[in-house]
Image (cartoon, rainbow, N blue to C red):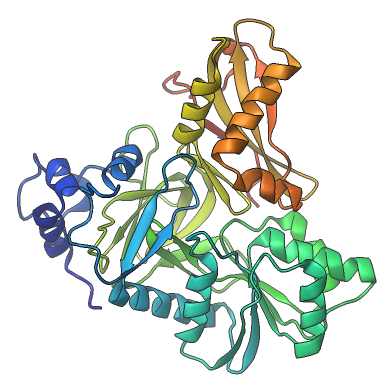
Length: 418
């Protein structure tokens, strides 16, 4: 599907989508400069993207694949792709895998997760199918036991494992527990989360000949964001030529960032996706420019919009709604999410400010409320992919605030992003 010129995409969106018509009501017609457009407010975006009264889409849902965002905690956040949009996206992503080291004839085990409208497994399977080199696809899926995958690697001489970092780590655990190494594995392609350096020795013990590389940067809602850049720094990506426009903006002022090394909020505009237009959409990550002229950037963590813990996305506003509804005793004076990493795994902490001394029962009550709204988190914790959800009680003055504005920081990312 050919990319639309930016001006045509903007005009198409405001003409056919009630949501964009409202958003661009005060924007002059004929705009060709992204910085003159408002940044998408995710809460308003998803409130408009509902059924049957959808105000976001530009046309009827007649020929599309529908996936769900990993950030769902309440009402599902559906993301439809037309047939041509999906084909173009996976073709570009498949070409990116070649840049990451996929070679002709590689036998690839797909360890991403599937089911319940989750798009990761299907997206990677289609990307491999449309990759510009021949390959052998082994559709294992992330739900397969790690010991089964270890046996499969030996049986098929699997050369590539593609999956989220913690699933790759689980397979390495199974190999290491047996005292075995997978000599055939040449390439570990990860996606869906950052791969931290503390996993590298663990993976190297099980896969001594494997190179670690990103398979690309994308999400169900935003679509394509960045292609992998070959090199030692797996956090570096660049905008897909003629498909995506990536911006970095100051998290407080919204002003564009052009100076290398200065972190900012990642915004993406998709030039070929028109059923659900993505124009200045905040992806939820922070990055810094490596080279802004060629659109090359380095991921450095999450924004305040939500935490990504392994493959589970916890949007701050969604979690806040759950906590506020569960606070029937009115003991809270504020909250923020804290993302930490220890013992080679990510964990999420609910930092709650109290007005009265909380009880253990109240702590369990808040954790159970979040688990009920986001059952994927306790499921992943039970499988060992993440640490169990915990609560940290503090006084209101101990909540982290922005030193420039004094405002509460909804998400504090305490991980070391190397």
